[in-house]
Length: 151
Image 1 (cartoon, rainbow, N blue to C red):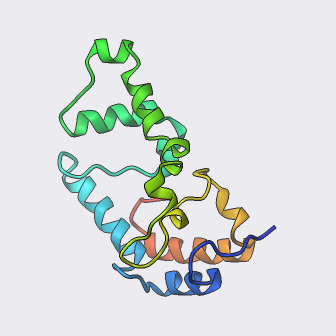
Image 2: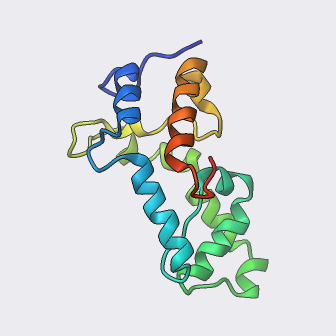
């Protein structure tokens, strides 16, 4: 079942704009490719991680991030459950229930709650049709071709 759009712009219009590279900031793929390229050229300065990777093994990636910012966990912190505590505090369930994320809006006028769905990999199928997913896949394949970056 396809759900109605969550934000203020109808989903088909958002898809069209995304595929055309129209964005408030820049085309999504240019943004992602730029950071991906820099993470390969300067891995000590740019940390690149995909959401799907983080969801697959969050403990490993929180530790990687801590190492990257120069604050690795001590053995005592690891034994004491510090990583797990951080994951609980930063979990989708916790963050999506904070008042700041349930009310208010960004400078764009979009309500903060519009930025939260379920936080599940593959949840797009509850919002878009298979045809819409195929369109995005095609555009992303074209735009990311030759970059070694896969989604």
